[in-house]
Image (cartoon, rainbow over all chains, first blue to last red; front, side, top):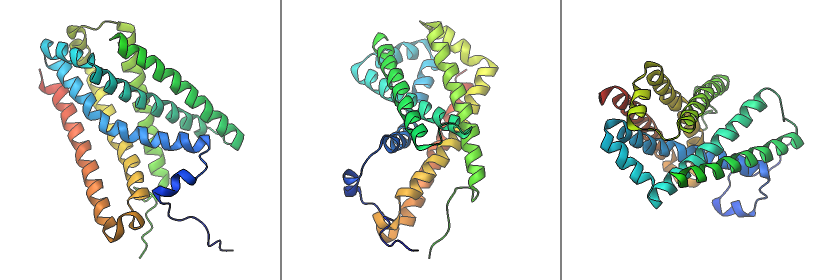
Length: 130
Length: 123
């Protein structure tokens, strides 16, 4: 039986018309945070290079990371890392056969969002404290 | 013409395993580095340099950036084949995807070389 109304191509303008269950939001956020980290590694390597090169580099990096823009970038990257990490752990746990039912996966998505929210909050405090 | 390209390595099992193994390495390094930074509290430049001059830390860091290459490549490849398609990009989609994929590989190559330079070139 062929269902000819299956959506094969989705236009960006259709996205808002979709229902976005929690698991779908959790999934697309995992993808987006991964892309942010892919680009973010450049910032991390830049910082590592500067911090190891010299005492002056280390101190000026500290200064940069304590500027409003620096704090925002640091917190943003740590948040992407926190979410991607927690959502990834969820996948690894599910690999062992846990939370594979519909209800179970909904619950796992909720737990993952809760855990990463806590980590993102803590990362914010850590960044502000310098 | 439709080419069946459902995974990067033409073998979903192998992609799956590489994505998992690299994920474990990345997670371990993340926990290690965050743990060190939290436990040490206020890290001085000398502490920091001493940490990254340890052979085990250099190996872990290089291993992590290599795991990043495998992990990010599978992820970015998947995203590219999901979204860079004729429906959105027209007839040139294959070309756009190729440029995107070459860009991803080049950036990852830069990350590896940069890491090697940071770890062993600053001396």
